[in-house]
Amino acid sequence: MRVLVVGAYGLIGSHVLVALRRGGHDIVAAGRRIEAARRAYPYARWIAADLASMRRPDDWAPLLAGVDAVINCAGVLQDGPRDDLRGVQVDGTVALFQACAAAGVRRLVHVSAAGVGPGAGTAFFATKHEAETALAAIDIAWVVLRPGLVLAPMAYGGTALLRGLAGFPWIVPAVHADSLVQTVAVDDVAAAVLRALDPAAPARVAVDVVADEPARLGDLLTALRAWLGLPPAPVVPLPAWTARLTAGAADAAGWAGWRSPMRSTAMAQARDGVIGTAGACQRLLGVRPKSLAETLEAWPAGVQERWFARLYFVKPLALVVLALFWLVSGLIGLARIGDAAAVLTVAGWSGGAATAAVVAGSLVDIALAALVCFRRTAPAALIGMVAVSAAYLLAATVVRPDLWLDPMGALVKTVPAALLALATLAVMDER
Image (tube, rainbow, N blue to C red; front, side):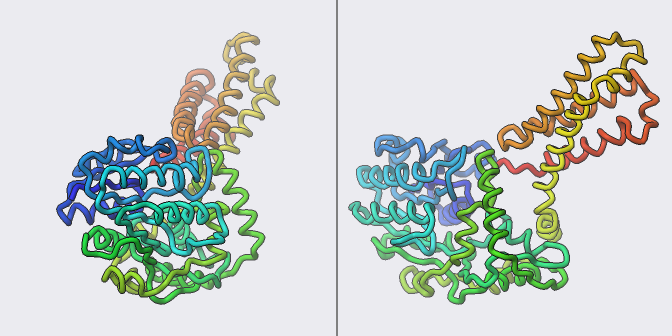
């Protein structure tokens, strides 16, 4: 079949692409940012599409030409500068459903989430339920899949955070350690999607895709730590107020473009657990989701997984340190203009030129500190930090080479900052 996959570059969507490729299907893939996706999955025909801006069935008609089946894997956790929760999970999604019916699409698979239902506790679950309700009223052969906590060989979103917690030195910190979660391997989700595409599979059903046995969140973290090959460490339950504090900070960072897995919606889900109906996937689709132990046994962990887990919290810490370093550097320069300008006047600069240079440099430092706080401008700010550090070192060499011998001079202050900026730039994820 020719299959349109919406949200094809996400965790589930990318594995669905691989499964469709193996099944010999003709793939049309849609997503918001497709440049990297084209390179990673060149066998799909990629089309830029943002559900939040495609709120009428007519918006979807060009993408559905000649399409036999549609798989919707798109979704967002909560509102933010790059994410419109209702626009994606209700308006754009329902418009897609209606367009599929009008275009005569034979099969529609909608990926939702375990726990979706009436009386949802978060806006994420409420919008998912609203879309499912709208789908039930549309005359089309649809299947809703509700995965549990999706585990994958790659680190992604909330499961990346779990790896970071599991790799924490000496202890395993955990909020809501006693919450129950039912996991599912991402390849089992992809297998369920392919089975749901089969015309012989049940239609107009909602199917939970979860492992049979739930696990405590603390036990899941312990299992991940053992999978990483790290020495055993005690799970240390953290008080609930730490979750609220962390979620508040993560939500604030979210409005700066940082889509942290520690935002309030994710914390609420950790509190409430992730529970679905065990056995439904095997009974209705013939796919038995692997248990947690079977899932981890199928993916041997290597040095890259251990590095990621151990360094997970270093990246945000590095960004905070860089922002503070450049902010303090700029403020000190403004507060001590005379002392800083004297360094240049000794080298023969006029008083006015020296003062102007110090003020300009200080303002540049402060600007870099501000820009690195925003996700969209952070990569450019990191490059700017490296460039400014190089410029300061060059200037020190030309104007006052004796400053290189100063314990608090250009070498000591700028080289570590430049190296930290380079390292942080290397791990900036564009996905």
